Image 1 (cartoon, helix red, strand yellow):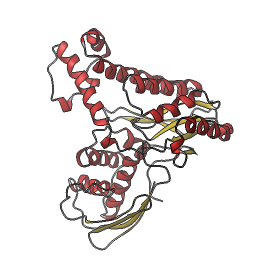
Image 2 (cartoon, one colour):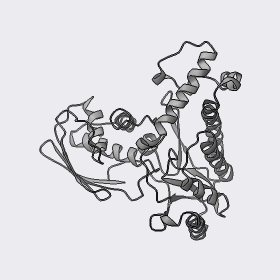
Image 3 (cartoon, one colour):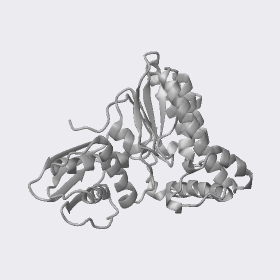
Image 4 (cartoon, helix red, strand yellow):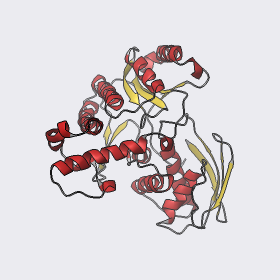
Amino acid sequence: MDLWFDVRDDSAVVLDSETFTGHVEFDIAAPTLVKQGNWGDYARGAKFALQKRFQLSRGIKGVIKGSLPVGGLSSSAAVLIAYVMAFAKANSITLAQFEVMKIASEAEREYIGLNNGLLDQACIALGKKDQLLMLDCESNEYRLIPKSPEMPEFEFGIFFSGLTRSLMSSDYNLRVTECKTAAWIVQAYENVPLKEHGKTFLRDVSEGMFKRHRDEMPPRFVRRAEHFFSEHKRVREGITAWETGNLEWFGSLSKASCESSIHNYECGSPELIAIYEAMLTTDGIYGGRFSGAGFKGACIALVDPSKKESIEKEITEKYLAKFPQYKNSFKVFFCKSDDGARFV
């Protein structure tokens, strides 16, 4: 995703998009208005979060363009980080990468209204080429783990279903609430003093506490907790697989993650599930899963670069055999890792 911009001498923000129609204009020095229901809300959200910390007086004139399809590829986090960095630069504000990440995340939660964590923003702001980002969302500690010299060559395959989605119109926020409720139920059984629901997280309870009461809990909340605790284990194993260069193991963990997303977290449209199932039987794919929250959008996979042509052909044939209506919108992309958000 690219944002080309010039700094203005006044406080006007003037934006156009090569992806979406319409023209966006607002005053960066004025109080932030309510959402307008269009793509400009992400720029307004970045302004909203920055204004809580800094006085803004200079706007920009810019054009934003994405090189990948919208939906399931952290597109909202990417545009928010771009706007935060651009507005900060225009107003001579110096921000560390971690500050950019937190401001963009706050904009998405408090202005856009999506109750997500820091993962998407962290990958975009902190990510480095050929390195794995390990982030502890409780302590905000993170480290970048270089690719092992023993690891085979790989690229990322992105299989866009042709079906765009907005997390605001999906069950994403509901899943967040269900996870908090699952933690609340366990704490109630354990006679642990409860915090406000919004400040409750599954990380507040141990897996042992959960297992003691899982048979007493409603099945919906059991499944959400199962997903959380199993994902936690997979992350730890994934770090070891990456450090040792075991791409087969790393890929198998991503597949197990997707299985849990489908059955325990209960996300994934029929389209995404069809792509994932096609990936399982396609030679040259180490592993993969839904990208992002898994509500429509895309699947992402680790692939053998020498087999990209046959992978694209096979996935396309399998998917369109089930969903021919997406013949003109289904897309396959291959890419390598790169450094995160930066000025060029």
